[in-house]
Each structure stands twice: as C-alpha cells, then as structure tokens.
Amino acid sequence: MTQLLDRLLTSFQIHASDFQKFDFIFAMDRDNLRDLQRIHQRAGGKAKVMLFGEFAGKKRAEEVDDPYYGARDGFDVAFGQCTRFSKNFLKETFPDVKT
Image (tube, rainbow, N blue to C red; front, side, top):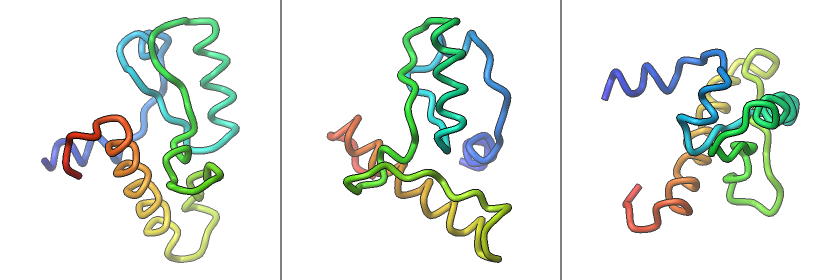
C-alpha cells in the first residue's frame, strides 16, 4: 500500500506511449487538459483524457486547487479534492466495487 501511495503522490512527465498504456489520463486543471488533449490528438491511443474534477460530484467540474498558491492548508484541500474525485470515479466506473 505504501508503494501505491508513493506512486499516486508522485507526478511524472507524460509520454506519447502513455495514451496507449492507460485507459484514463486525468488533468488537474483546464490548462493541463488542453495540453494533454493536444498531445493525445497527435499520439492517438485508447486513453480517455479528461479533467479529474469531472468526478467532483457536482453539476460543474472542478479544478484541483493548486496547493502552492492557496492558504496554509492548500495541500490538505487538494488532497481532499483528489480523494473525493477518486471515490466518485471508482463508483461511476466500477459500480460493483466498494470504496
């Protein structure tokens, strides 16, 4: 579990081959989404590229708050958003799996 959490909390540069390897690629904000969509258009692949905040559980998608520009609790807020988005993604994508 620790290795999984370490991997989830680590960012990495996207590669064209990632659009073939992964089913979903999530952007944290709309600027990242545009960049990813541009790469995906050139690279092709099976990945569904979308704003992670589509799984906010609200009528309108959210961007993940940038923890470096927020208040002192910025990382807690961003972590809370990502946790909520993840649970909603799992519920929607794998409805038979308990989260």
